[in-house]
Image 1: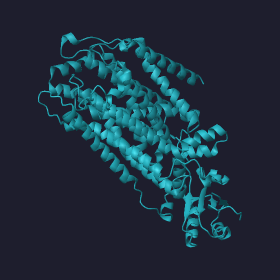
Image 2: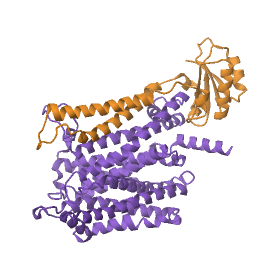
Image 3: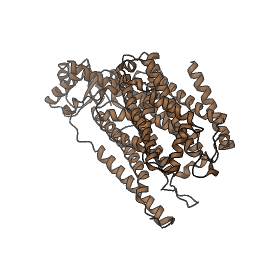
Image 4: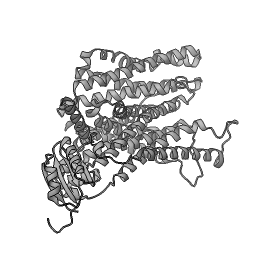
Length: 415
Length: 175
């Protein structure tokens, strides 16, 4: 109840921030030239990254025939849908005149204009839209048979109507199941390349720019690993309290947390390798501007952000090598929180450290956040939790169909 | 039997194994029009109730490829024919830069076509179906398995066949 009230309060703040933004303009944020992107785009990259792991867990593990994923996929997909929905708001807010965001789409218009096809910002628009719709469809297709169960078990009239409409008349015919299974498999096959492409597009927003620290071919794989890293962290941070409050220990067991922690560690090591390669690139390229950018990370005005990132993303994940840590929920939760913190700071550093000084002394200047910057960050977190708590109340947190199938498979094996 | 026309005869089972046995028994008895209902996808039933291969993958492939090519064509038309912008002699038809949007739109179209195809192929959404009138059918979305035999034979003949396979109950379904 307190959590819900808090989430509602922060969502209210978020709404107030949006109203203020739309009526006043993006001057309410601390962004200015040269640091034209700051919290807003950091929030965007952070949220969309969190939205990658859900589909990945669900789809990639489905393709890899890992039946243990059954209790994880529903809430991981839900997390994805909410995180991607929230992330999509930020680039729109950032436009200056957000109500014209649809100008990014190619549609016949009186101005006789076309979007700029060669810009990564446009690719990103298509990537976000495609990803949001595909992950919603994937989520809904998985939810469909569960809706039928809820419809049949509902005792109140409004519940029967509500779930009945969502179930679309699903009656579990064998022929329907066959088509449903084929579709789930194919959607999983589409979702995995989509996850990789979407976050690569996010990376191209940066590497298509010429700024030192951005213009790098390393970015797409680096970003994808970062997305999975922070996504797994969010999955852990959410599931550890949920399994305790809703007594799901029998379904989401220590072995699941262990697997998630291992995947988080693996993604984290790729990230750590990328940090090292970034520095190596700067040194090996011998471009004075790139080297200056790298040195600014160590002792520039934003060095503290860099060291927080290193502490969270490099040092804090090392305990995950030990099985005892992976089997201690509170420790995993703490590591997850640190990783989420570290990944936010990483995005912030990535944006601000390259923008605050580039090639010319004239384009140098520091970024100072305003209160509204913080409102948008914490407000979006509030909205995420509000959506998640509503979901837990209204829809099944675990996929009933997947669990039935898993139980059937296990009894058959033991028989 | 009442004077009402009969939609079919439904039997409820408590395990996929008895359902499977019943499907075999019924088809041995010569009933062709049989439909099974289960609370989850039971892989073992795929052999007992063979259906023509799904065209869904094909539909998705065509939709995805068409959307991808369409998007490439749109970008070509926009950048080369309708609104060419000369930038330092760079090629107008810069196809590598057109791939990302085409790829995303292609995947999106394939997924949307797949979901629509699944609904259309399954005849959904549908507000009502005769099987929903059977009270015991509500359990079929949870832990029961149902078999619907649509045959003109007398009910007793079909029921005799189903009882032997361990049916919990046998109900006449009206349209």
